[in-house]
Image (cartoon, rainbow, N blue to C red; front, side, top):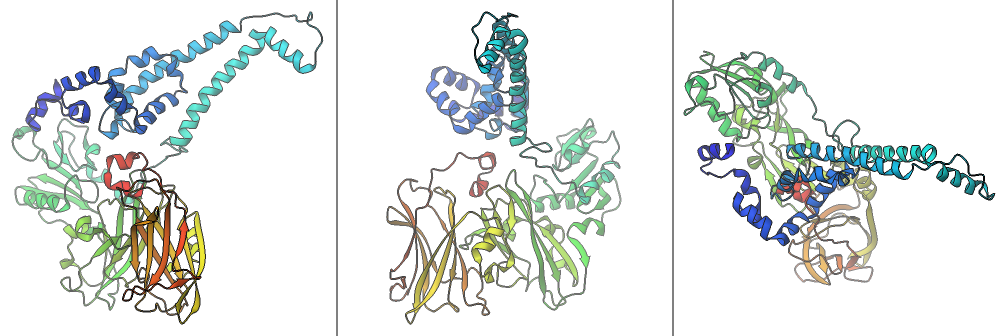
Length: 598
């Protein structure tokens, strides 16, 4: 009743918006109830999906499966349990959001009654006592000990059964915490780091009167919420809100989640400053505004989140100092952080800051424009001064398993290569892989393992045999995923016009390929080999079954003539482990772009 009343005003619908989360079951309360009663096959199909089964098992496992013995208390929660279990919104059945909290109470009560019932059942069956078993014929020590335990069940077996039941509870609860717990020592402990920037928040919140109506950006909104009127920016600024309830203060942090495009946020702030608002305080991306304040200029301290220092200006117009990543493994969301040093001859029209995030095959993932760094909105390159050290942090990006960064101000080599490992960590690969003699060992030291190596000889020029080594990550892949290969060609420079090829085949038919001369790393004239990286994406619409192989070689693109490898015209690496796509994990289910790194 409450939600539809407000939904009509805000969203233009008279039904609760939550009913729109049930997909095939319908989008109204009546449709959902009818399908629940008349389509048990559909209900079972939805409820039996692997993530939903895992959700149900998880609710039972955290209480050592004892809610099954107190099942009638679980049934009291059935409407809520079904609401989560059958929802088309993954957050409701992945178990880590607030939707799960009320169910824990029901399952906890069911477990409490369950353990009491199990204990009483054991007690009734172990009530027998007999202080004497001397009438039994003499047996070995083991048999006499067993007889003593059985004949003196109350004093011997019941304490053991009680200890076993207690141990059962502790093992399941502690085991689940150590595997999946989010707290200290938990298997998925993921604390939010508290930085100097975060500690500034108290300074700004303390300046807001306790009875003032406030609008705040999403990242800082909870820290000013204990008041009668609080809004998420830009709500609360305009009609139809009654004047008495409109926000008189605004607390903004432009460096964190704002639920607005950075350009839209700045445009709104500019409009506020032109319409009766003024600046109370500002520092490191925090901005505190209030109505009726005269100050209209944003102080320099505000820009310290992007202008981080002053140094001697270099000769180059724009010098890239570093590329780093700030990663949130739980959601596989990554902010890329670039630092540039502005030179004396810098001209933003001639040498604008730029970067591209690519796959190893140079498919574009993101650019400066799509990443929309707030720093470039608030302190655009046209205002950059010689000697300024500028930090530019992107909005959160969903990177694939491997991301290659090319940036203005760097050499023609990749500015950085990031790789997400099997344990979910994002690592930055060493800069010297291009010249690594033992390329496989260097990759393994970076965490890319296990690697399978194949070594052969290739006859590229004048019948001279040169070594070729290939490394493949020995991990299962699936349609839509990518196969990574690292190659070391024992030749320098690369003979023109030859092109290398990598073919991915299913049952002998090529379904994907990566052709061309080695270009991933720049050729180093000081070494007698060329390190190369290829990535081949498995088409998402190809079945996972069949025999999957990789074919590697080189050919002349003009004549089509192939170069021999150990007497053959290609090297075959088999067999790849190609599986059906896994069930989406939580990050993939809620953020589709995160699926590429699952």
